[in-house]
Amino acid sequence: MTVMKSVLVAAAATVALSAQAQSLPTSGTLVVVPAFGEVKHVNDQVVATLAVEEQDKDKAAAASRVNQKMNKGIAIVKQADPSAALKSYGYYTYPVYPEERPLPAGAVAKPRLPTAWRVGQYLEVTTANLASLPKTVSAAQGVLTLNGLNFGLKPETIRLLDDQRIAATYKNLNERVAAIAKAMGRNVSDAVLDTVDFEGSGNYVTENRSAAAPMMMRSAKMSEDSAVAEPSFEPGETTLDMRVVGKVKFK
Image (cartoon, rainbow, N blue to C red; front, side, top):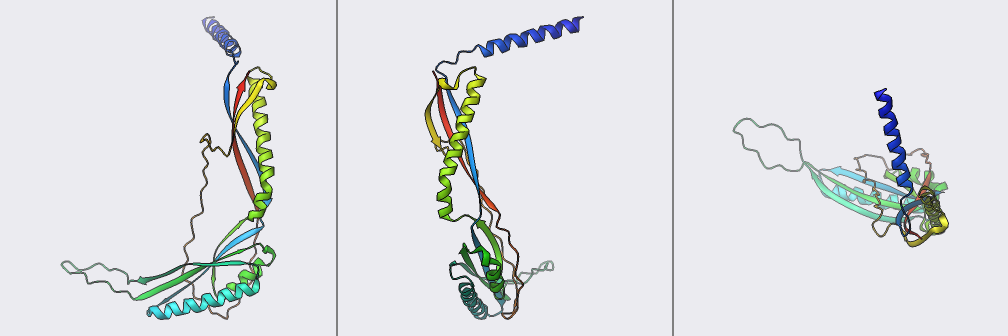
């Protein structure tokens, strides 16, 4: 009986609190409402990273082979895809030292001298010709190595999708305002938009975008005359999102 009485008292208290909460005045209330919208589109551009690396006891010999292969690789890519935009970067030269071995007690370590030199360079290829991508990459891989692929959208495509993103985000804001008004026991017509902050520029929303870390290239010896079978690629799609924060004031 005592337990039942306690349950009834607790239930009555909950009902009383709910009634008080529902009766809270909302006139003049300012509500900050975050909203979100997104659009998806099939990727229509790719950035391919090609690379070459050589190792030799003679630094000049290694650099010479890298230069020759990169020049030939660029010519191959240009011939396979004339529409591609090319960018060379990341030329590096560094020494290769022998493996360190434990020294006997009391022995003094001698200065380490390089046993070889490693030289390399990267080539960034940007193209919207996805149909010819497997053929282009296959041709380039006869000389260079494929170090990475990043599919995405052309700048023109992103600009065309802006209208859709804004519309989707604003629609979501209206839906959330209507839901909040209903929860407060108010008509949505009582709500007035005071501020609309697209992209959360007022720091209401923190955006966390992580960039993919660059891939390290491993040394690869390849004959210039070797043939590479065409690879298969799936471009996938990109999701473009937009955030908005609205300040809504109830009459």
